[in-house]
Length: 95
Image (cartoon, rainbow, N blue to C red):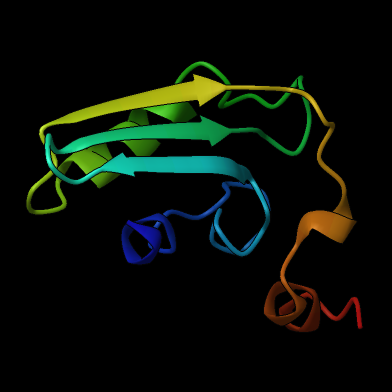
């Protein structure tokens, strides 16, 4: 799942959504092929707020063994640069 999520990039920042810290929760029920993702965006007014969860869901749905994906868009806690991985901060020159 994580590898699939690392293939999805934020449309405004050239970093994948996993390392950017936009994935707040990832629950996988391997026995039933169910995945629940808690996802945020960098800002509530993000122009892709309506379409991005569907893109993330379809990306994870393509992973072998996945039968059902639920993507929940959440806003708490608010995203900040501190949620990014060290690799992402390095890539963006923030270290």
